[in-house]
Image (cartoon, rainbow, N blue to C red; front, top):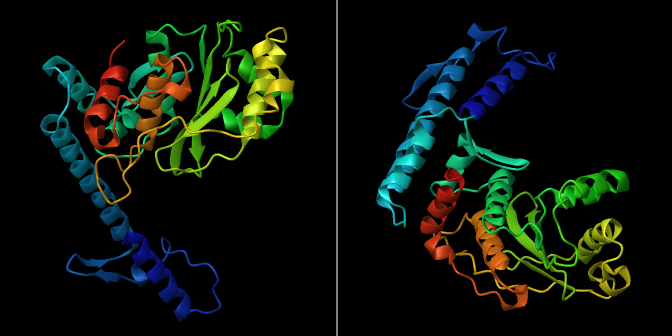
Length: 310
């Protein structure tokens, strides 16, 4: 609303003086006002104050909704854990560190996005997966690459890519490695999970909405990097992997698309939960999902518990 009002003021200024290409509303603040419904008449500075008050009101509303969600919706939390999460949400500054796992960390601001039905970013996904990975002690058998791995590969800079991989495979035992997991950001609007079954030489992807991951070349690039670092291991034979032409689905639960609130914005949390299931499974082909999008309120709180623990 404020942006529309400012645009209107700028248009009216230009209409009054067609020789002027750029209008400085700040310098000529008193020259024009705009009326907004029953709220009143505002100059440019007044619109700034109105915008600020709107942001405060939105923040207050979000806090109220988050607290209601924490206290009144289903979960498996005990009272102590729930109180710890509430304290983190409302008693600490937004930049306070909630969780840290290796190179990944989550502050209060991004942690709060787990409340309600909101899109979570790469920091939540990478940190949560890294914590599950550590808790299951899978450092030798499962390689969890970060969500910006595809960005590394897209640079085409071999030295840079190898340095990025080198930092993350230090504890991998190549002969024992069975699985590589990579969260995939799709069009900055959706999350999926790529799973590479190293020993069976199979690649899998799923996302809950049936989006297609067509770039098998990314799988080949990942294997190429592993082959570079572990040239003696047959699991990373480039000749064999180049025969892999397709990416199969591992069976992520279906995400609601019918306007249902619960689960509709939880693709990122679904990636975390699927990574958990894949780590516990012998093979991606035989995965048995332990969760559903329709129960996402419970699962989001479980991820909050995971990140707020040590």
